[in-house]
Image 1 (tube, one colour):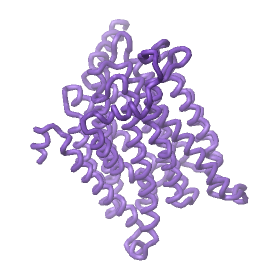
Image 2 (tube, helix red, strand yellow):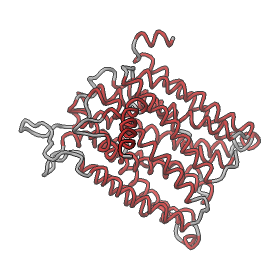
Image 3 (cartoon, one colour):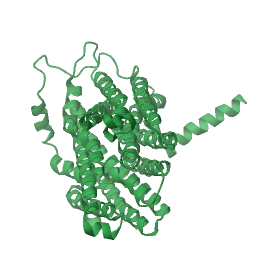
Image 4 (cartoon, rainbow, N blue to C red):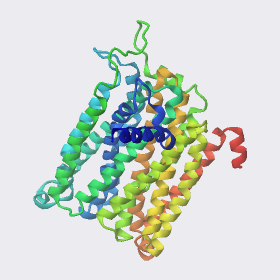
Length: 463
């Protein structure tokens, strides 16, 4: 029996690097189990994304009857902190704590911000919606409380993800960075998929009390997961190099970052592509609920389908990049997958087809996974070792800002178009379809801006 167990485990170990391109990132200093534990911070971020963009936006719009424009603005509030991701990354590059930590203090602070936001969020949402005894409370209390809660969760998630990715880059060899990106984002999608299924099951029989228990449970779980992820992970005494002079200035470091190869164009591609994929985030589940008549549990499972598609994209991207693939070419492939994905989602409303909706949602995840992996890997490869946090922060700042603007713009457009006389005659799905068309246009523009950055042979082949 022992021989059978040993041979089985050895077989799994041999299969790991073959079928999971990031599995061979392990080394004697950083075994796979330790990489998996570090990547748990992405699970907490994925859980926050599902709650904010998936489950809670559906509950607020459909069950609590909050206007979609208010929901979109609330969900986009974290973008206030998005531009500070570059500064946060820079500070974690140059920070000197008393015990020699650079990254860990920022991750712990971010975790506490997420905890505080989730702790008060369900009560603020019930007051905002005027539910039950909260109907007599002034509405400004609900709006203010919900805004603060979303801001806290957003600020914490930005800080945890930016600095966590920088720490992972510190611990990885340069040649293993694509595998690290794959592992980190696979864990993000695993967190999103599991959270979507669990939250969907817990909220299938919706009630205010259940909403409070679920969101506050997520607050506690976020703190526990991030503490486990960081436990004895960053070496003590690991300080940035110092020549004894004054601390480096952010603007000096930023000007040095801008000396890289076409950084502005790369950031512009990230922004356009992210807007193209993100504008539907706040509308996908309401679209399923109002146009396709799906339940809360069914629409929440769509987030899991999106995560599965993203998982396939990330695993495939890690495999191709590990074999010497071009990350920006991979990002362009993600855009080419995303365009027909939105077309399928639009066609689903014509025949009330859940199959087309599910396939389109999964392809959206696949395209977003390829695009995100490609642009992030390109950023990591081009960043000097001493500017990893700054480079990842710049990527995250543009990505998060573009996502926030897209979510807010998409929800506002949906509400404006919904009240137009022509839209009322055309049907319930018209406002959503208009937003999906705009996303296709944004993805086409992103592809045009990306083309000059591609290797010459790839660009010639694409033309």
